[in-house]
Length: 251
Image (cartoon, rainbow, N blue to C red; front, side, top):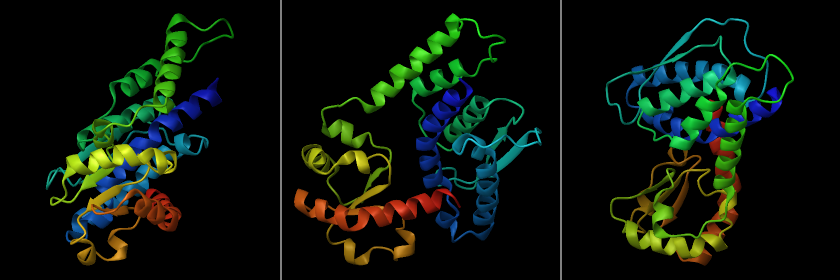
C-alpha cells in the first residue's frame, strides 16, 4: 500500500513541477543577479525536499520545517514563501508544494486537490479492510487517472487549455488552435503534448529568436507550418528538447 501511494504522489506531482520550473527557473532572471541567486538556492533545496517523492528514496533524518523563497515571472519584486513540514507523509509534501504552486499563479485542478487531501490521512493501524475514507480516496484517484488518459476529441478549446502552450503576440491564436486540433492526432501527441513547453511564433520572428541557450527545452513552432512541417520538426528536435527539459528539472 505504501509503495502504491508513493507512486501516486509521484505521478500527481511531476506535471506541476514542470510548470513551477517555467515560472521560477534562474535563467529567467539573468538580468537580476539577486533573484537568480535566490531561486537557484531555493530550487536546489526544493529538489532535496521533493526527492523522496519523485525518486521514492527514504525520507531525510532532519524532520524540521523548511522555508523556501522564490521569485516568479508573475510576482515581480514580491517574494513567494513556501513552507514544508517534513515530519509528515509524502502527501503532506505534495500538498505543501501545490500550495506553493498556487502562490506563483499556477492553477491546480480541483480533482488533484481533492485527491491529495483524501490521501493525506493517518495510516491504518491494522490489516483490516480499508476504511470508507480510504476506499473513497482510492476510487477518487482511479477516476482521476482514468480521466487523464481517456481519449478525448481534440478541439480548439482543448488545445488552448494546455498550460505549456504559448503564442507570440503576432500569432492568430484561434486559427492556430483550430489547425492544431486537426493535426495533433497525426503528431503522436502522447509523446510531447502537455509534457514539454511549446511556443508558436510568426515566421517573421523565427530569424530573430533568442540564442539556443534561452530556448533549451522548448519546442519552437511557426505559424506558417503545415502538419507535415511539424512532423518533420518533431522528428528532428523532440528527443533533444526533451533531454534539455529533463536537465532543467534537475537544476
